[in-house]
Image (cartoon, rainbow, N blue to C red; front, side, top):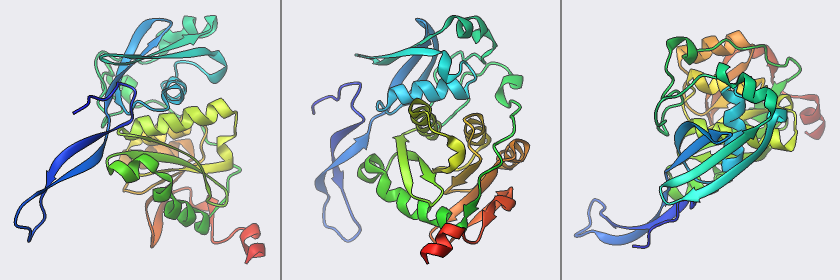
Length: 281
Protein backbone atom coordinates (compact mmCIF):
# COMPACT_ATOMS: atom_id res chain seq x y z
CA UNK A 1 0.00 0.00 0.00
CA UNK A 2 1.22 3.47 -0.84
CA UNK A 3 2.23 5.34 2.28
CA UNK A 4 0.62 8.73 2.88
CA UNK A 5 2.59 11.92 2.94
CA UNK A 6 2.71 13.55 6.40
CA UNK A 7 0.48 16.42 5.26
CA UNK A 8 -2.38 14.31 3.81
CA UNK A 9 -5.55 14.55 5.98
CA UNK A 10 -6.98 11.18 4.86
CA UNK A 11 -5.66 8.01 3.28
CA UNK A 12 -7.17 4.98 1.60
CA UNK A 13 -6.89 1.55 3.24
CA UNK A 14 -8.00 -1.95 2.30
CA UNK A 15 -9.69 -4.13 4.89
CA UNK A 16 -11.81 -7.26 5.16
CA UNK A 17 -15.40 -6.43 6.05
CA UNK A 18 -17.77 -9.04 7.51
CA UNK A 19 -21.45 -8.67 8.26
CA UNK A 20 -23.76 -10.92 10.24
CA UNK A 21 -25.40 -13.45 7.94
CA UNK A 22 -22.57 -13.41 5.40
CA UNK A 23 -20.72 -16.58 4.53
CA UNK A 24 -17.39 -14.80 4.30
CA UNK A 25 -15.82 -11.39 4.50
CA UNK A 26 -15.25 -9.14 1.51
CA UNK A 27 -12.40 -6.83 0.62
CA UNK A 28 -13.37 -3.17 0.90
CA UNK A 29 -11.58 0.14 0.75
CA UNK A 30 -12.14 2.85 3.34
CA UNK A 31 -10.87 6.36 3.75
CA UNK A 32 -9.19 6.77 7.12
CA UNK A 33 -8.45 9.91 9.09
CA UNK A 34 -4.73 10.62 9.28
CA UNK A 35 -3.24 11.33 12.70
CA UNK A 36 0.16 13.01 12.50
CA UNK A 37 2.59 14.51 15.02
CA UNK A 38 2.44 18.29 14.62
CA UNK A 39 5.31 20.04 16.32
CA UNK A 40 4.48 23.61 17.38
CA UNK A 41 7.41 25.90 18.04
CA UNK A 42 7.74 29.61 18.74
CA UNK A 43 10.61 31.45 17.10
CA UNK A 44 12.30 28.12 16.48
CA UNK A 45 11.98 26.89 20.09
CA UNK A 46 9.84 23.73 20.52
CA UNK A 47 6.71 24.21 22.63
CA UNK A 48 4.39 21.22 22.13
CA UNK A 49 3.70 18.22 19.90
CA UNK A 50 0.04 17.62 19.09
CA UNK A 51 -1.44 14.55 17.45
CA UNK A 52 -3.62 16.16 14.80
CA UNK A 53 -5.08 15.88 11.33
CA UNK A 54 -2.58 17.60 9.01
CA UNK A 55 -4.96 20.13 7.46
CA UNK A 56 -5.62 23.82 8.23
CA UNK A 57 -2.47 23.90 10.34
CA UNK A 58 -2.03 27.66 10.08
CA UNK A 59 -5.49 28.02 11.60
CA UNK A 60 -4.44 25.58 14.33
CA UNK A 61 -1.35 27.66 15.05
CA UNK A 62 -3.34 30.88 15.45
CA UNK A 63 -6.07 29.27 17.55
CA UNK A 64 -3.67 27.36 19.81
CA UNK A 65 -1.57 30.49 20.37
CA UNK A 66 -4.62 32.45 21.51
CA UNK A 67 -6.27 29.76 23.65
CA UNK A 68 -2.99 28.91 25.36
CA UNK A 69 -2.61 32.64 26.14
CA UNK A 70 0.76 32.74 24.43
CA UNK A 71 0.09 35.78 22.25
CA UNK A 72 -2.70 37.82 20.68
CA UNK A 73 -3.52 37.90 16.98
CA UNK A 74 -1.59 41.12 16.45
CA UNK A 75 1.53 39.66 18.04
CA UNK A 76 1.81 36.80 15.52
CA UNK A 77 4.12 37.91 12.72
CA UNK A 78 4.04 34.76 10.58
CA UNK A 79 3.48 30.99 10.59
CA UNK A 80 5.67 28.52 8.71
CA UNK A 81 4.34 25.00 8.02
CA UNK A 82 6.94 22.44 6.91
CA UNK A 83 6.05 18.78 6.15
CA UNK A 84 8.72 16.36 7.37
CA UNK A 85 9.18 12.61 7.18
CA UNK A 86 8.16 12.20 10.84
CA UNK A 87 5.27 14.68 10.83
CA UNK A 88 4.71 18.40 10.31
CA UNK A 89 6.65 21.28 11.81
CA UNK A 90 4.78 24.53 12.52
CA UNK A 91 6.86 27.49 13.61
CA UNK A 92 5.07 30.60 14.87
CA UNK A 93 7.06 33.84 14.75
CA UNK A 94 6.08 36.34 17.45
CA UNK A 95 6.82 40.03 17.85
CA UNK A 96 9.21 41.34 20.49
CA UNK A 97 6.52 41.98 23.12
CA UNK A 98 5.12 38.46 22.83
CA UNK A 99 8.57 36.92 23.00
CA UNK A 100 9.21 38.72 26.27
CA UNK A 101 5.92 37.60 27.83
CA UNK A 102 5.88 34.00 26.55
CA UNK A 103 7.33 32.74 29.80
CA UNK A 104 3.88 33.28 31.36
CA UNK A 105 2.27 30.72 29.03
CA UNK A 106 1.75 27.29 30.54
CA UNK A 107 4.46 24.92 29.42
CA UNK A 108 4.14 21.38 28.13
CA UNK A 109 6.69 18.65 28.58
CA UNK A 110 5.58 15.87 26.23
CA UNK A 111 3.37 14.86 23.34
CA UNK A 112 -0.31 15.78 23.45
CA UNK A 113 -2.74 13.05 22.40
CA UNK A 114 -5.61 13.84 20.06
CA UNK A 115 -8.09 12.97 22.82
CA UNK A 116 -6.62 15.32 25.41
CA UNK A 117 -6.35 19.07 25.56
CA UNK A 118 -4.06 19.23 28.59
CA UNK A 119 -1.35 16.66 27.85
CA UNK A 120 2.03 17.82 29.06
CA UNK A 121 0.80 20.60 31.33
CA UNK A 122 3.22 20.48 34.22
CA UNK A 123 1.40 22.15 37.15
CA UNK A 124 -2.11 21.73 38.58
CA UNK A 125 -2.50 25.51 38.80
CA UNK A 126 -1.94 25.76 35.04
CA UNK A 127 -4.68 23.24 34.19
CA UNK A 128 -7.79 25.20 35.15
CA UNK A 129 -7.35 28.92 34.59
CA UNK A 130 -9.62 31.90 35.38
CA UNK A 131 -11.78 33.26 32.57
CA UNK A 132 -12.99 36.73 31.69
CA UNK A 133 -16.57 37.69 30.90
CA UNK A 134 -18.16 36.79 27.54
CA UNK A 135 -19.73 39.55 25.40
CA UNK A 136 -23.34 40.21 26.42
CA UNK A 137 -25.10 41.26 23.23
CA UNK A 138 -25.80 37.82 21.75
CA UNK A 139 -29.40 36.56 21.59
CA UNK A 140 -30.18 33.16 20.04
CA UNK A 141 -33.40 31.50 19.00
CA UNK A 142 -34.09 27.83 19.56
CA UNK A 143 -34.66 27.52 15.84
CA UNK A 144 -31.17 28.82 15.07
CA UNK A 145 -29.62 26.24 17.40
CA UNK A 146 -31.62 23.42 15.81
CA UNK A 147 -30.81 24.64 12.30
CA UNK A 148 -27.08 24.58 13.03
CA UNK A 149 -27.24 21.10 14.54
CA UNK A 150 -29.21 19.82 11.53
CA UNK A 151 -26.70 21.30 9.06
CA UNK A 152 -23.57 20.19 10.87
CA UNK A 153 -23.22 16.66 9.48
CA UNK A 154 -23.51 17.85 5.88
CA UNK A 155 -20.80 20.42 6.60
CA UNK A 156 -18.32 17.74 7.74
CA UNK A 157 -16.64 16.73 4.49
CA UNK A 158 -13.88 14.60 6.02
CA UNK A 159 -16.08 13.36 8.83
CA UNK A 160 -18.58 11.89 6.36
CA UNK A 161 -15.79 10.08 4.54
CA UNK A 162 -13.96 8.67 7.56
CA UNK A 163 -16.45 8.64 10.45
CA UNK A 164 -13.46 9.34 12.66
CA UNK A 165 -13.22 13.13 12.94
CA UNK A 166 -14.61 15.78 15.20
CA UNK A 167 -15.83 19.10 13.89
CA UNK A 168 -16.16 22.61 15.25
CA UNK A 169 -18.44 24.92 13.30
CA UNK A 170 -19.32 28.60 13.41
CA UNK A 171 -22.98 29.46 12.91
CA UNK A 172 -24.41 32.91 12.38
CA UNK A 173 -27.43 34.24 14.22
CA UNK A 174 -29.82 32.41 11.89
CA UNK A 175 -28.10 29.06 12.48
CA UNK A 176 -26.51 28.89 9.04
CA UNK A 177 -23.05 27.33 9.27
CA UNK A 178 -20.48 29.72 7.87
CA UNK A 179 -17.22 27.91 8.69
CA UNK A 180 -16.20 24.45 9.83
CA UNK A 181 -12.90 22.84 10.77
CA UNK A 182 -12.27 19.12 11.34
CA UNK A 183 -9.66 17.09 13.18
CA UNK A 184 -9.19 13.75 14.92
CA UNK A 185 -8.83 15.81 18.11
CA UNK A 186 -11.81 17.81 19.36
CA UNK A 187 -9.54 20.46 20.88
CA UNK A 188 -7.61 20.76 17.63
CA UNK A 189 -10.83 21.19 15.63
CA UNK A 190 -11.91 24.04 17.92
CA UNK A 191 -8.48 25.68 17.81
CA UNK A 192 -8.56 25.50 14.01
CA UNK A 193 -11.97 27.14 13.92
CA UNK A 194 -10.85 29.87 16.32
CA UNK A 195 -7.73 30.46 14.24
CA UNK A 196 -9.74 30.72 11.02
CA UNK A 197 -11.98 33.39 12.48
CA UNK A 198 -9.10 35.30 13.99
CA UNK A 199 -7.36 35.42 10.63
CA UNK A 200 -10.51 36.71 8.93
CA UNK A 201 -10.92 39.47 11.52
CA UNK A 202 -14.53 38.58 12.26
CA UNK A 203 -16.44 39.10 15.51
CA UNK A 204 -17.03 35.81 17.39
CA UNK A 205 -19.83 37.42 19.43
CA UNK A 206 -22.08 37.63 16.34
CA UNK A 207 -22.83 33.91 16.31
CA UNK A 208 -22.12 30.70 18.16
CA UNK A 209 -19.95 27.58 18.05
CA UNK A 210 -21.21 24.03 17.55
CA UNK A 211 -18.97 21.06 18.38
CA UNK A 212 -19.55 17.38 17.69
CA UNK A 213 -17.79 16.18 20.82
CA UNK A 214 -18.55 15.96 24.50
CA UNK A 215 -18.20 19.29 26.24
CA UNK A 216 -15.38 19.14 28.77
CA UNK A 217 -14.18 22.24 30.58
CA UNK A 218 -11.27 22.99 28.25
CA UNK A 219 -13.66 23.30 25.30
CA UNK A 220 -15.51 25.98 27.27
CA UNK A 221 -12.20 27.60 28.17
CA UNK A 222 -11.02 27.79 24.56
CA UNK A 223 -14.34 29.21 23.36
CA UNK A 224 -14.40 31.80 26.15
CA UNK A 225 -10.84 32.92 25.51
CA UNK A 226 -11.69 33.44 21.84
CA UNK A 227 -14.61 35.70 22.80
CA UNK A 228 -17.54 33.41 21.98
CA UNK A 229 -20.71 33.97 24.00
CA UNK A 230 -22.38 30.62 23.28
CA UNK A 231 -21.20 27.06 22.80
CA UNK A 232 -23.45 24.25 21.57
CA UNK A 233 -22.31 20.64 22.00
CA UNK A 234 -23.81 17.46 20.60
CA UNK A 235 -22.93 15.45 23.71
CA UNK A 236 -23.20 16.08 27.43
CA UNK A 237 -21.10 18.57 29.41
CA UNK A 238 -19.07 17.83 32.50
CA UNK A 239 -19.87 19.51 35.81
CA UNK A 240 -16.66 21.54 35.58
CA UNK A 241 -17.60 22.70 32.07
CA UNK A 242 -20.83 24.11 33.47
CA UNK A 243 -19.00 25.88 36.30
CA UNK A 244 -16.50 27.41 33.85
CA UNK A 245 -19.31 28.53 31.54
CA UNK A 246 -21.02 30.19 34.52
CA UNK A 247 -17.75 31.89 35.45
CA UNK A 248 -17.39 33.30 31.93
CA UNK A 249 -21.06 34.20 31.56
CA UNK A 250 -21.24 31.93 28.52
CA UNK A 251 -24.40 30.25 27.28
CA UNK A 252 -23.73 26.51 27.27
CA UNK A 253 -26.14 24.31 25.30
CA UNK A 254 -25.52 20.57 25.18
CA UNK A 255 -27.21 17.30 24.26
CA UNK A 256 -28.20 19.13 21.09
CA UNK A 257 -29.93 16.62 18.84
CA UNK A 258 -32.56 16.65 16.12
CA UNK A 259 -35.36 16.56 18.69
CA UNK A 260 -34.13 19.36 20.94
CA UNK A 261 -31.41 20.64 23.24
CA UNK A 262 -30.65 21.40 26.88
CA UNK A 263 -29.52 24.83 28.08
CA UNK A 264 -27.23 24.55 31.12
CA UNK A 265 -26.09 28.17 31.61
CA UNK A 266 -27.33 31.66 30.71
CA UNK A 267 -30.76 30.64 29.37
CA UNK A 268 -31.65 34.35 29.30
CA UNK A 269 -29.88 34.57 25.92
CA UNK A 270 -32.24 32.01 24.39
CA UNK A 271 -35.60 33.07 22.95
CA UNK A 272 -38.29 31.08 21.19
CA UNK A 273 -38.04 33.11 17.99
CA UNK A 274 -36.25 36.22 16.79
CA UNK A 275 -38.03 39.13 15.13
CA UNK A 276 -36.38 38.31 11.80
CA UNK A 277 -37.66 34.73 11.98
CA UNK A 278 -41.18 35.90 12.75
CA UNK A 279 -41.07 38.30 9.81
CA UNK A 280 -39.89 35.52 7.48
CA UNK A 281 -42.68 33.24 8.71
